[in-house]
Amino acid sequence: MPSPTFDPLAEIRDDDDPELDVFVWGTVFLDIIMTGLEALPAGGEEVWADGMGSCPGGIANLAVAARRLGLRTSLSAAFGDDAYGDFCWETLATEEHVDLSRSRRFEGWHSPVTVSMAVARDRGMVSHGHAPPLDAAALVGTPPRARAVMADLAPDRPLLGEAEPTWVEQARAGGALVFADVGWDPSGRWPRDVLDQLSACDAFLPNATEAMAYTRTRTPTEALYALADLVPLAVVTNGAEGALAIDSHTGEEAVTPAVRVEALDPTGAGDVFGAAVVVGTLAGWPLPQRLAFASLCSALAVQHFGGSLAAPGWGDIADWWHHVRDGSESDSYHRSLRRRYGFLDDLVHGVPVGAERRATATIARHVDVEGFPPVDDPR
Image (cartoon, rainbow, N blue to C red; front, side, top):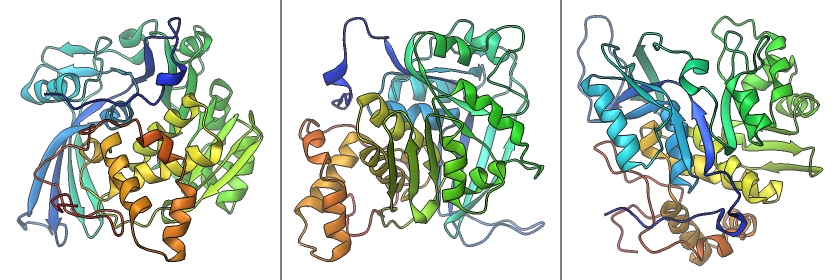
């Protein structure tokens, strides 16, 4: 039986609203995650992992994160007709309830695969794949109406079309907010003209290293101010140091510390953070609440292994808040949590009993935000 759902946008929905909250395009990988390794294997060496799990990865991390947070999510991607493609399609469509009406199966196309090896709270990855049979323009066509789309900035895949509008520009012209991220530049050049694409965006959410590299600045704060001149909502994530943001539309500026967490696997944490920012922005929350909520969701994700598997649902969020709010801890850190996340009281009040939680898999671990009981704790 499907878990009861919670809709964070219920109070603002209207009959004339788009059917979708979020639309994304990208590449879906089959992720195979090996856990419990003491070290990566040396040449010619065979090592055994304590645990293993499989799940859709790549752009699926973002789609699953958004869907578990209650957003009506649609994904456009190419899927192979092999067993890997079957698994990813079935998991996303049937188990995660992601709309795949803009996705296609392709005969004879090999599904992309990533093997991720978690070692000492870091990871190494090996991937294999081929270019999809159709590019974004051909696969997406005219994008469906949505409240928001999420896209990546890339030198070889610009969001701005020269001859014809890209699917992102079409979506924005149709009323969608465009939330953008950017990936690591292995060339080390970090071309600044990539940021020219921000003229087609409403929000930009890079990490601190990426933000400083592209803006040629020395600190995350300097990078934030540079980006705030280019895009209405600028957010810079800074790992264990938290996150900072400026919303030029509302005139708000916010900084939030990270939630203390036993971080085991950062895979997909940025996608969870981005999906949470979209939730708060679409719901009209104040910037400090949006930033705090996104930081919490990413903290809940990194405490478990495995990308989309680890993305939290509203059941996880409600569990965490009830434990923090009702806990006996009186130190300054926990008092700060209660102040910072007091806005969750009204939200989780409407979360139904048995609401969706992160997926259970062979890679699950009884590790949580500091002080949070393991999943088999009777409390």
